[in-house]
Length: 130
Image (cartoon, rainbow, N blue to C red; front, side):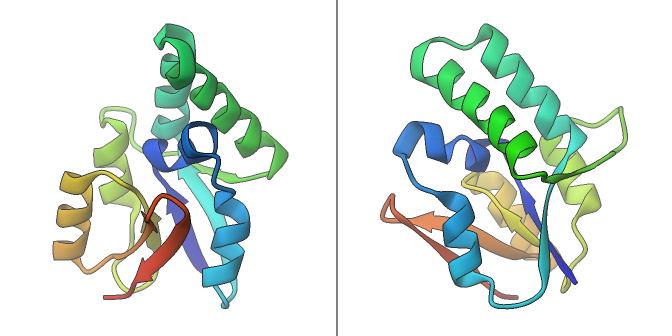
């Protein structure tokens, strides 16, 4: 079973752009998979929900609610890393798929051979296999 690991900015898409990322994941992932997040992503979302303003804060709060409602698996990462570093450390090349919109993170993961799931045209998801 493959893991689809969601990044912070990806989880905020439903609140900021109104895209149902979970139905889109089901549309593009026609294989056995489980949706996950690293624990540092949860910490980052909680921080944005607390300290962010307006739409950003609401998007982070919605993301936290969706993680609970969809029963997304939380992967405990190393505590000395930030969310992106933890995600890079956790992602297994050729097995895992990382869902992110972060340009630098995408570049780094692509070099490592990790498949990506990205939002296209602000309305649908596209998977890039490596």
